[in-house]
Every structure is written in structure tokens, then in C-alpha cells.
Length: 314
Ligand code: GLU
Image 1 (cartoon, rainbow, N blue to C red):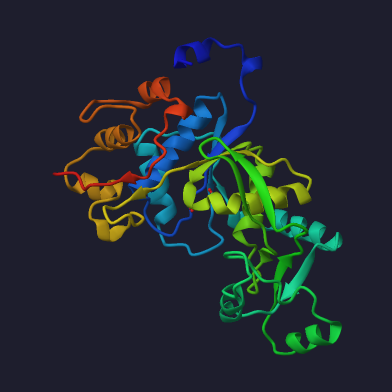
Image 2: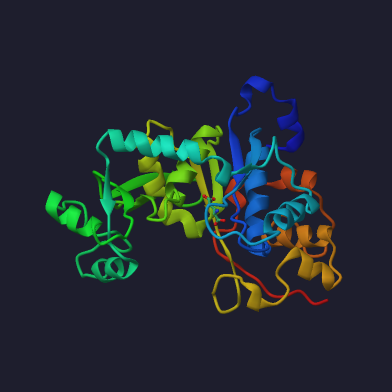
């Protein structure tokens, strides 16, 4: 469907929901992140959805990263609706969700150290990456003994399933591991999986477009959404940008952020062109803007393979 025909579409045919980009402010966005943001924007805007920006700052925060991330996205021309939301301002929502799960008997305290978990999870019968349930059925005495060790426990979900299926626009039906995932870490921080599920539903997000490194988290999140009585969104897990060794793009790969590319003489529009070319939405060197890309974008035409990034010549 073309951009113009979409514009002529009656409002009642447009999706009421929203898409989003949810960066963690742990550093500058590299080309892979920018490409995912562009795709999330294209998916949302091409379906008449709002596009929301959420800063996932419950974890490691690097000074100034949030501001640089937002200004890089804006410089590429991406726009978003409403105010930028920060997870650190939404702790009450996560507390409420955890309290509901707790009241339903769906949680338990976990005293395991990271080392203990790794050891148990590598046992031959453990599904890959799954918590083996060490603390799930502790007796009262055992729990008291563990508590008196002084380590504040994490809170885990008492999952009733070991796998769950989701539909993904890129990957089709995908079935993945669900384990007793952490809801709240020992240090009191709400866990990523919980926060993401609560936020997406609370913000009216019904379309999640993100890197396919998170595909394996989607079954956990969709299952958790169901337990909280929330609808799971539509998922599109898009291919990552890799270096020529097949590793995730990173600082060591040279000029990979907008600032670094600008320092080499590439302007933001050329960087947008680079991303568009990698997505098959432009030919190399062509001048593009977001309206053109929106017009050309078709989810079915999305490359299914990772983007192998080769540093541009200055
Ligand atoms: N904050 C996560 C990241 O930057 C993305 C989470 C998500 O999109 O669900 O990797």
C-alpha cells in the first residue's frame, strides 16, 4: 500500500495502537540500533500507528546517552508521539503488577547466586538458558535458612508452562522457553521482562519491533502478559547488524555511530541512505527521505538475513 493511499484511508481503517522504540541508555546508538529504530518507525507509521519512545533506564545508565540517542534519532528525521517515557519514573506500575502476581500465588523468592544458576542451568536436562527451579519448592525451614544468609532474594515467577508460542511477522510461529523468570532482582530493581510487558500494555503498544536478539524473550513476555490479563502485542523481530566476523556491531568496528560517521564527513541524510540501502529501500548513493522510505516499505520485503556492515569509505 502506498503512503498516499494510506493517507486517503478513512481513519476508522487505521490501527489505533502504537509501536515503539525502547533503547537502553547505556551508550550511543550504533548503526544496527538506528536501523532497528528506523524499522520500528516504518512499521508503526505504515500502519497508521502512533510511535512512542521509551527509555529503558532501570539498568546501566551512561551519562548523556539518553540525550545523544534522542538527538541522533531526531537527526535521522524520526519523530515520535507524546513525551519520552522513562522506566525509572514508572516503578509504581511494576510494583503493582508484581503485587498482583504475588497475590495470585505466582511468585517465589530465589536465593541463588549467578554462579549457582549457571552451574544448575548447564545440567544436561535443563532447557537452554532456563532457570532450573532450585528455589521453587524450598521448605519453610530451607527458605528461612537461606534468608538468614543475608542475601536479599530475587522474586521469580512460578511459571506453569515450559514453553510458549508467539507469532512473529518476520519469523512466523515461534515457540520458545518459558522458565521461572525473575520479576524483581535481589537489589529491588524490576526485571526487564516484567517492565517491558507492563509498559507495552500500559502505553497501548500493540506492535513490538526490535532486534532479533530478543526473539527468545518474546515467549516469556507474551506468557507473562497473559498472566497479567494483558494482550500480547504483534511482534516483528528484525535482523541485526553484524560485523564481517558475524559478531554484533560494536565500537571496535570503527565508525558505527552517527557522531563518528559525521566526523568522517557523512551527514545524517547519507546515513539514512546507508540504512535504507541495507534494507533494500534505496540504491547506493541515492538521496532519500523518510516519506520516500515510508512509501517503499513493505514488511514482506524486509531482508531476512543480518546486515553485514562494511565501514564506509570517507
Ligand atoms: N531496551 C532494550 C534494548 O535496548 C530493548 C527492549 C525491547 O525492545 O523490548 O536492547
